[in-house]
Length: 203
Image (cartoon, rainbow, N blue to C red):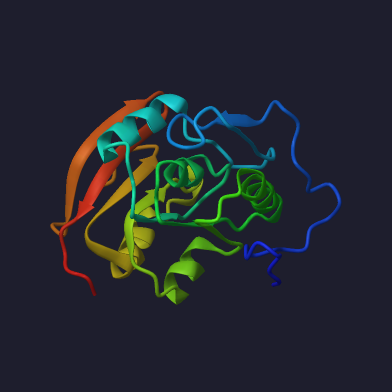
């Protein structure tokens, strides 16, 4: 895969992979890009985190992410990753395997001049197996039908800084082992969301 002049990773796409119509849009709710709009493609399983859940999440995280390194593993619309960058994160890695959704992420990153955002067109599990980064905050919102969260959390543990926080969206709350602390938990309609804290050591 190539990289464009901004340093973000590119994927070859057919001509219909362009910025979507205005119907598919999410508003950034805080930080430097507050009220800016990001648009995304209509794709199977792409379900942006609802505003209510995002507001709750960033209240839990303390609003300001200055200096943090973040991972948005199933980036989709990019709502969480761009929100984190807007709130001061030093580095935000956004991973998305769908090439059309990925193109929307690229176009939004360019429009926002998001120089702290790094985009990866990759499968989430493959990315975790190959990545060497270390993250303070992670956003996990995989398609519910895949049932991959136990495997993702196991692989993710090797990529976490001590005391890292992981936000999980799923159909039901995740049961975790003693190396995780369930810090907060909530529900919005069909979506369960919880904030987990990694209590193990860096590996």
